[in-house]
Image (cartoon, rainbow, N blue to C red; front, side):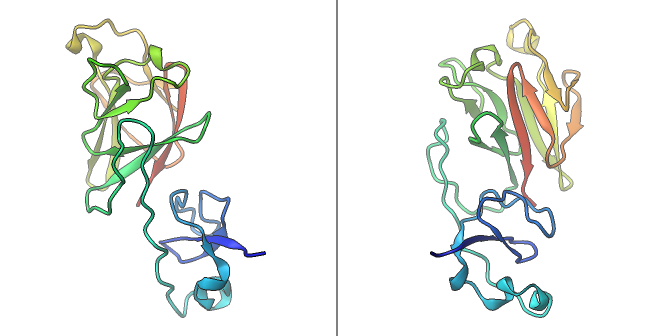
Length: 189
């Protein structure tokens, strides 16, 4: 039986394929493509020689989430991060400046949470916005009165309600609540 591993792009450590975070350096590897262990250089298999050699990066994975982002994610210099839906592991790709909201015909959010997800009806159409500045990610809860809507469901980061229009720095592993939806923040370095 062939054993598969995820090669960390940061430290080149070969991790079991089921892990989403590197055992060695804690880098997010959830989007790395598992490769057969016997096809990767010996340096990844042998921890003693890791510092002496460098393994090539695994092939780039092309993904498409099943939301409105239907085109494959291409390698780009633009920074991005992921929001992982805690209930089912579905990933939403976030770029700097993106607004997150429910999928609705009148919604203008760049990243839309699909209608089939239970609880999405309580998320605003333009709920919050993400920014990448000076190598850090920030989250901003949007004031719904700006969109002629009443603000009824706050944005919670690690169980703390965010003040509207104030930016809060994000860290890998933070938990974001939009109404009853829970997302895990996955930063890509």
